[in-house]
Image (cartoon, rainbow, N blue to C red; front, side, top):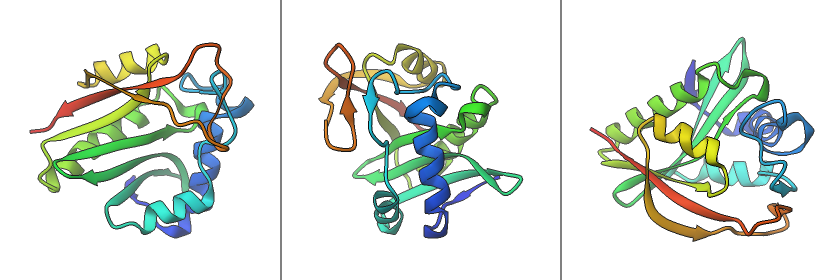
Length: 169
């Protein structure tokens, strides 16, 4: 079941997101960033602020009362920004991510937004290919990767984002 996350979900979302992107647990899945980045992917404080902002929606995918996936959707002018698409490392390749993408498209349509945009780390070739198979295209735009005390690059190559988008409707 996919529903809107609330502040009550922050602790479970934080655990899920960090387990899927960083550290040893993330290496069970194919979407890990553990070989590129150290530190946390997010914090409970960041997630609380995100959920409390009315321009943001975090959708959660719940099964057997466990949150096994989520995605951040942000209303930005004439587009919906999609970020932090997360599926539990043990359940990747089970269709959860695709269902969250489909629900994001419905959300964009309901808001009257004509496209969804996202940024993906440019060296994440398998992830970029997955998004392409799901209808997203590279725009040609690039953005610098924000290193911080949360996102600590450990890759040999410099990191940057590519911008991808999908037209809706």
